[in-house]
Length: 153
Image (cartoon, rainbow, N blue to C red; front, side):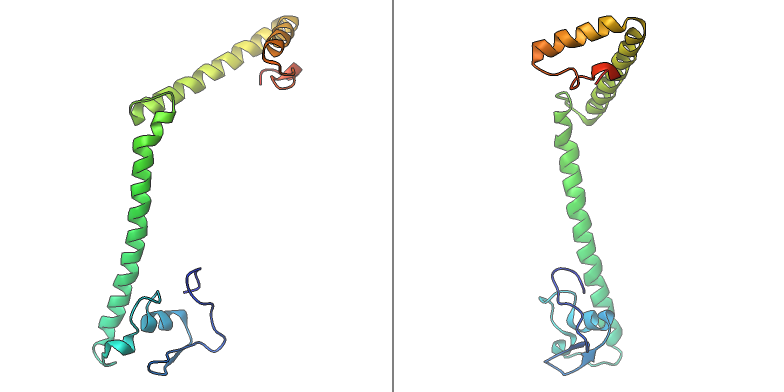
């Protein structure tokens, strides 16, 4: 019960103003009042505390499971929506598998380009530095923004 939509734990427990019963644990209070204020307290259901008590506990547990299932269903619906629409942002892919292929391909090309540039920089550092300056002038950027002397950005 101590989530954002409920009341904090009172010092002397929860007391029902319908029947006067006091509950000192969260579980007891939830079983009597329900998890949310919209639920009807057990004493208002006019069920005797005999054999039917197990039914009330089962009802409260079922309500709790239903709330958890609703939350999971909403999360799954959101994931499905993202899976069906989010892949279009990766290279204009038409399907999730095409998006994964494009992503892997882009990463592979970037890694290959960085390895080639590092090899060229090791062999002809002046050539790499001159290319960086030329590109920076073309794009109005400083050499530090493109990697400077420390290799590719």
